[in-house]
Length: 254
Length: 330
Image (cartoon, rainbow over all chains, first blue to last red; front, side, top):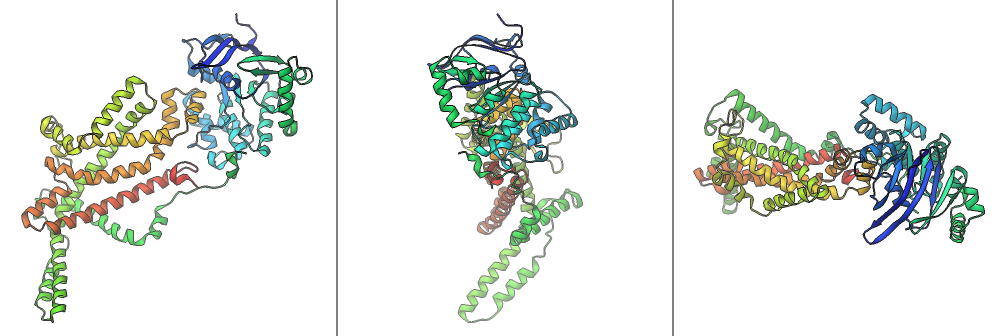
């Protein structure tokens, strides 16, 4: 059943929205400290796969294990699960009524039950980590897209997660703002954070990923280390997709 | 490439107004409302503290009526050629109206107190009920959604006056309210006012829940998702993420409800609540000067409504957040 070393494991995971089958039997596992990059054409189920991990989307069948614990059972405490898994969204989804600092402290105060001072200190150190301590009192509307996304990352990191999910974190950004977000992500990877990233930033994938998965029509077509996928893909579809992607999103931000 | 291009980093988007700014912008507005409220408050304090227990009708006016009456007489007795005489007569009528108004002021001030209590208490109590009602509608399951929908539609679908009659005459709430300690003591509302408060609160809750419901729906769904993703329960996420934004969006609609409530509170006169309209009508019945007394009462209502709008606009400014709602927009 579950591999003792795997931090995250998918076991024959199926998911559908009504008639539309999105995931058709996903099997994969990643270990602590791994950086997994998921690529694939739009509609291939990448985001759904991510959202199944913290149960923002419920699966139809199969099992997902986090550090050996099945997390897709009815008995799973969903809120406790989400404390262990941080998520960064494509549209940032910063709490619009709270400052950058307030975005980070909310979880610390209400979920982890920190005191006001503890939460503030912890949040400031997370904002410092993403280089935004000087914007602590700015509201989301006063931040640039890149700054918003870095606050989003700080907000997730503050919960001290075991795993971070990145759902196309740079897709809504202007090209010149992508670099600052990728830099933060690369620092995180260097610090040993386990990361599952849906992204088409091939520069990041080549440098930071331990493994790349190519997802198409709800199943993992090919999976392997970056060199293997970029240089000698086993499947024709993988090669074609990567070629198109590299010409669009080459490593210019890296 | 994205919507973010419009957002300059770190730009200060503070739109928070202050009373000072408002004052200098609308001097005439405050020159009228300031003295009105000052007089009203002094009047209440005088009636309750300085001469408590005096029958309202025998309370002295603060302003003398005699100068206006005599000035009117002088104008009428002045011999003048026909067109001018008509004009003088008209002025004399105006002075009589002022004298009459001054005599009515103590009564109307007492009525305005009840009107304000009815409005303020029922909009606040209504809000307390409206928030769970609207949350049940938007985020609830079948079990919470349909009862909330039914209650809202029942109340919005029947006349307010009929609701007051049901509470007051039909259910006879007075017999239960009467035994509550403190009812009718001093400036505290009496039995009929309490029944009216219950009616207005329920009615306002239904309307407010609709305003809040549509405000909640305008909060981006990603906000709730993000709240849940950090481990907040659904209720916590609604409380800490959705409601603070939705309630800000609801302020314009809420101001509207407040203004309506000030005027609808006059329906309480039908269940013997001696609020502003009731007092005006009583004076009209005594003097037969209906047009005059209703004109004075109308001025009171306008002053209350304009004050309420100004206050809500101030509140909206105070709670404005850059990028959020109508006042936070840049």
